[in-house]
Image: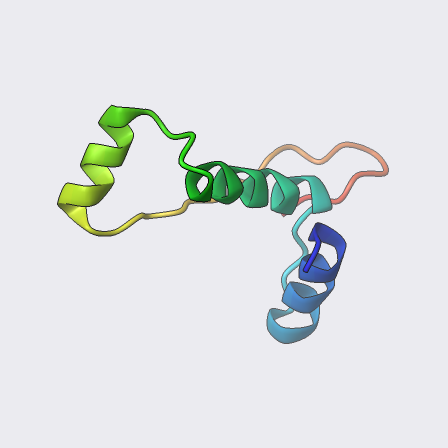
Length: 68
């Protein structure tokens, strides 16, 4: 599933408008983690805590761009 498909699914299932760029950024972070390109300290913290908390932060709207 790509960022555009994910954006549509989130909108349809949850009624949330999230920019495609924000979704792509999150997908890139997850991809980085899954490809084991994460630094040792972060990997150690995740291993110890056994969970990851993802957070989204709203941003100032710009003309013509989607935002939270």
